[in-house]
Image (cartoon, rainbow, N blue to C red; front, side, top):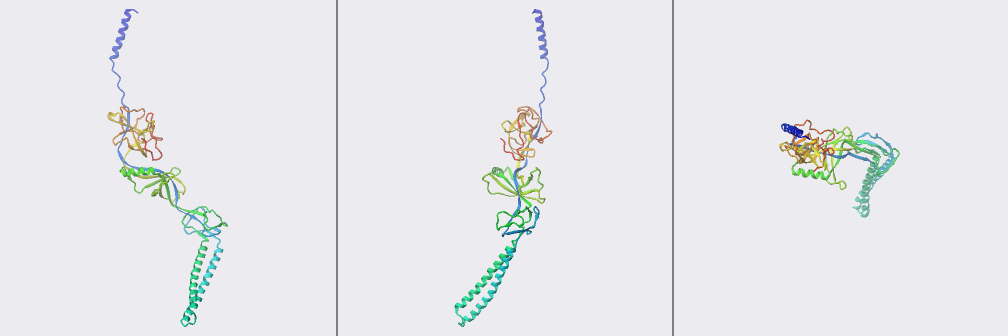
Length: 402
């Protein structure tokens, strides 16, 4: 290369370098905008959803109290009956005959009373003048007393025969809906048989028996003792029907069983519900929403602000000092609507990020602002980068995530 060309190229390179140094650096990009919610404490009802089954308020299995052949059935299967209504008639000819026989025996006994009584009175007068012996008088007095006892026995026999005849007419012991008849006219029934003739159930009110784990009850009582939860007054209960709809009537907790089931580790709770329209049927499977208490100083965080990392731990992004993003590991208790009850990891005044979480990392400087939407989107919470959303666990009960 010629020396003149070399110096010319060097001069061009130097000029380009000086020109580049004279230009200003491009401005830094503005911080990303995020939607935040400022957390505060508030009262939150503790709602627990439990499985349960419906049972009738009263149940009566109708059985015969005497033996005999069914003559007639006098009710409509599946209909409503009233207490005392005639349901069946059993052939009563043998029992009418037994009653007549008992009544005849009573008449004989009553006649014997008069005869033996008069004889005892006469002997009493005669024994005073030694006309009869003392033994004869004692025998007459004993015969009169035996006749009176025989009358009492025959009166009892008449009453028993009358009761048996009345038992040939089987009546409803309670009012309610009556099921199908398991026997037809002409069938032979026995006293105290194992199988009922039919069953009556009173369902204008029903019981709902639900089960709750003993561990949940212990946790609740300990939280109440610590003062973080106040006891619910009246223990109102709602029902979720098998088709997912909410039953319009509201029930009341009646009692909790005093023992824990050894096989399931659960305690049975019983509630009572009005059922005037007959929508609730015995044996129906339902879910009961029970308000157990109220957390008085709860922190409620929108669900889209809580995520789970690759290890399944619940986390949240908050705006910290100098508007830098901080990641917090949190513990959630349960869902209340579209929010989680947070028991640790967040405090009142924290600015929880609920929008703009995609690709957000701890330490990033952000521009916080009011969110456009703070309700949980359908299908779960918003995703945080590669983290999995904290989906609602069941209806309202979530185990603690650490």
